[in-house]
Image (cartoon, rainbow, N blue to C red; front, side):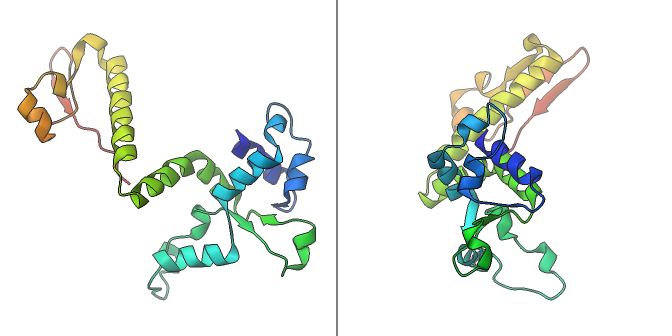
Length: 192
């Protein structure tokens, strides 16, 4: 909700710039206004903003080779850091410290960024825990949708039907569903 409050504030500005003090003193309505304390704002900005050097470094890590006329296909570091944190070298810094070059990228970060941040953090730890848990939750969600469509009695989880040796191999579909004339086999994959 804090992200929506910041996004609403930025969209309401003629120029998409702000400081922490601007946010705290803004006229954003409840329940968003109550979220705008300095500690929460700074935690949000830690996840969503980067200074020029951080943004440049992130781009350099991923975009190793720039091919002329293909720049638009490169990774845009504003996907990871949609809020640009200025510094005292810039004349405007005393009035505002943050710039949002593209509000839609901020919206995307708010909506999808948590998944990618968690995924990246677990990858740094060489852990599959997050992806396994997310995959299980996604599989359950897909099963719930199938049950709504086909009816609960017509949908079965494959691993509840097959033997233990096949479950361990994990080389099987996720769900089986049937209607009056057909049998459907579903495997749901989360792709990045």
